[in-house]
Image (cartoon, rainbow, N blue to C red):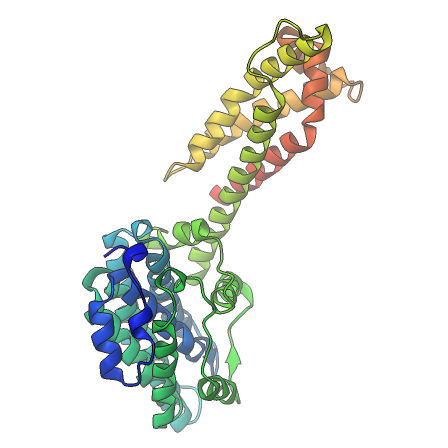
Length: 390
């Protein structure tokens, strides 16, 4: 069922877990996944607030976060999450739920922490599974999330129902807002999270978790992180997820750098498209004709290296060597322009200036100089991206 044909009106007034389950059974898969994702997000602090950080806890948290983000992305953009990616995310979260964590603190506190963290991982696993299995797995995610809250409160039943209260509120939202609306915690659950922090520490937002902290905060406040960036992160190859949080963090840095390159190239191309005219009218003044010729010559100089960079940003395995060659060509244009403008007497600048001379000379140099800021942005962003590619 398409979201634009689906109404959430019938979900207003849900009061029992069974009513919620029955409603989720009839809702589109995308809606049930969104409900599952939001339930997991409400109890996610029980996964990243820990007694004492450790490598084992980091691995467990990474698996939980991966599956949770995967479900959230699928709730917004189902086509962005291939089935194999969803399956692997769910499998990893399930394995991390079973991970044995070395005990370091008081036995009672450790037992509560272990159960809460494992519960969060199981809930995330079910949320990711809902992408593949639909409402049944989504319902399980909500139940696991409620059980996690109860476990974190040492079996306090009202904590369980607080998670359900949040899900009832979610069900009343318009379907097309579920993936982006703020994720509010019922007061009891919010108070419980604050209490849970006592004697524990949050691994957010430091170090390798800085990105995840920003993603979490954006989601709960209704200002989600770039969906394109989330798509790149969710689709990071399996070997990096299985390696370490640091390995994934490096891939995230590469993804962010790639997006910055795309953004700067688009800005430059927009300027190029906006500045040049498609044709020369008979009644144009000579200066206008010269400007048109200069703009076309400039675009021709930049087209090949920009096309190469764009192609590499679209590749699953970008080649730093090819990006470097393209950057060198753009830099040569930049240096050549500096020579024409009298800003550089470097011998190489004179050599590079010759290409501009053949392309139109001073008029082309002036036209390119007007776009110098955008050209420099592409060069800087591309060089940074190359460093993240290793």
